[in-house]
Image (cartoon, rainbow, N blue to C red; front, top):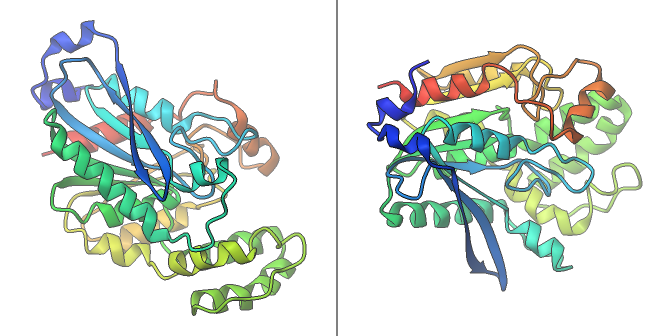
Length: 310
């Protein structure tokens, strides 16, 4: 495979060095937001990929809490650095807020976009990077697409990203588990989208409809990924796996149909955390807690080939 080392005219001498990690931080809302810059060498000059992770407390590495440690995004960043691509991935500001025992009831989806723009600005001012790409996973696909509107971004990659507003995706996920739960949730989802606060639900919907979550949900629900990506006017790659039960291939196909000239990559057997897994839900979930399971074949090559295209 032709690598980005030659396409982006990066010296082949980079191959003799180990990858370099740098921890970056900035202060906002009286907390420190942190991220990891990964470069092929200390003397690196070339392209960089800005990562956006998924929903909830999913961190820069693709892990969600202590239970679901799979390192999917960390592994993807490390695979890309082997192809001559620097990357930056970061924790959403909600993660240090929760770690500090703070519940921010005025948390907005727009804060994730603001933080992404802050990191992009820092990358652009660094001086080492000459080409900028954005990669968003799951919820991060929508956040990343909003940041990718910046004219400095050359290409955008959506990995397991939804095509519909988040309230519709949540409803579909609930319906797949229990039509009764979905029917109970629907009026609450509609009200929150309209900007109203609703009464907290009993278990098992309680965590979804906590009062402190509702302002964030309201801001999130009003973004339509198809509309955002259609307006990017730059090359877009849409990636999904056939065993992803959180964001199905149907979402990827809908995105591709809406975004004129986009590239669609469907990877057989890949689940939501970018690893091979069967369709059986319980066996599929095992990959969410397996940091030793490799990324699915075709994922890295597909991304690298897309970024290399002129």
